[in-house]
Length: 121
Image (cartoon, rainbow, N blue to C red; front, top):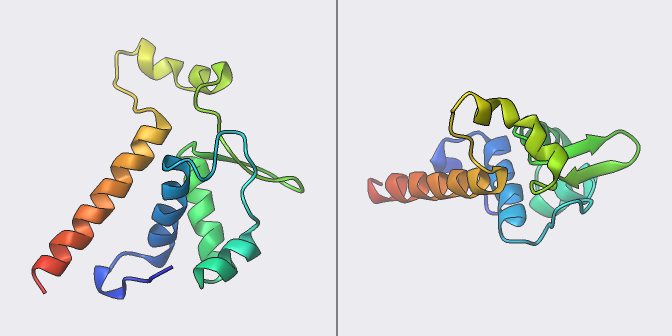
């Protein structure tokens, strides 16, 4: 992974964007297990702690589910159980992004941020 130090974004956010990109582009499909933290850290050239922090954020966003001793899985956003977790938002009349769409939106925002920062340097 190319680290964009001039971007002034935390490295774990850059890692998160790269991992979300794999979900968005279909490299990691719903319910699939993703590589372990050490493997991802080695592949991306970052520390295990950085990968762990990125995965923690992805779990908080509902994109992955972590099962101690079993691994980290991509959430199936189309499942009834997943939809039920957000039913209170729909019932309240609030707008709720589909997690894959949210990941894509965040990826685009990150790319726009990079574009803007390069434009002024």
